[in-house]
Length: 469
Image (cartoon, rainbow, N blue to C red; front, top):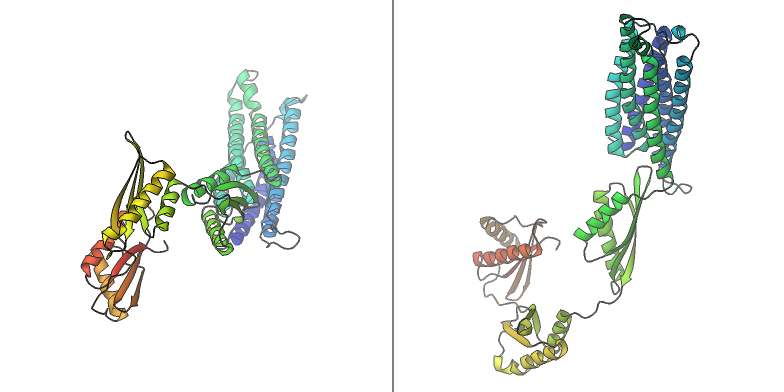
């Protein structure tokens, strides 16, 4: 069901129940003369007005943004919640003034008299049952739709439960008063229990007034959502460590979070690449803050200083070979550097002795290393030749999938084979496994690549990788 329709239905049901309870409490309050029930009737009457305002507010808030309101109409819910707080404040003041007047009356017997009947108890019990169910329903919809107006209604009716219990306690005490000796402190206290219960109701109302008013003013004043900002910082650290978060601000307009972020990216990125990065970050934010509107500014970082790894790789390239497997270690014997050098697999090793020694000397000079140890490996960039042609594409893909299933590997999400003459290169993509670390992922993919090559020997060179990586 659409969120706006959910809010409208919840608000309308609140109007219906508020109207019924107001009428019922007013009739019974006038019949019994109970200030507690009359204060509850007035409270319910204001709830009826507030529920009508809430219904109006959620309908207005559902309107899409326009030229005059580019951030939407969600603020109307905060305004309505503030109006409810002011209405409740008026209710609480009336109840307190009426209670003080009755307690200080020259004719306390008349002022404190309550006509007890089964209806007095029934209306309070019915009110409690209705408010319990209504508050639960409104809280649920408010959480689902992030509606400030419905949350205000739910808070009202949750407080009504406790205030109704206070009134019920007051009625029970008044009913017990005739059983006590006239003039005793017990009789004095029980006769005034209904008025004291009304004061308890007023205290509940004042508390709700403060909470609703404070939250509404904070939202209208664009108070920052520090908890959401901290969540975004954590998400960026965990999921986008390559792009440091410079600053983030989060505020809510109605039920919609608005996020402003400044993210640092390498200064030499192409604009299309920078755009792709911002879209990925916006998606990450929206997954954890539904309905969020994110404005993201990318800020170019300064060029990174040369690290020892960059220096070593640059020196290797000047001598026409690749390098990997770098290890830099400060040991008791001094600063040690180890590197795997990639040389043409068919080249005579004697022909590369001079470049290798030149590489070692250059690394020593640039990094003041005490020892540079190298391990020579054949280049793997050149594909091997396979004399037998591959079967037709459909049959070949079935063979690869069957081999992966027999290995107990995940079912491939994509299989792509590239052919040029007798050179065949097959890339097998499997679904990502986010729970694995980089080291665990490398070990797993290397193992699957070796086992797949063994399962389909002399066919193609295989690479198993994660889809999308």
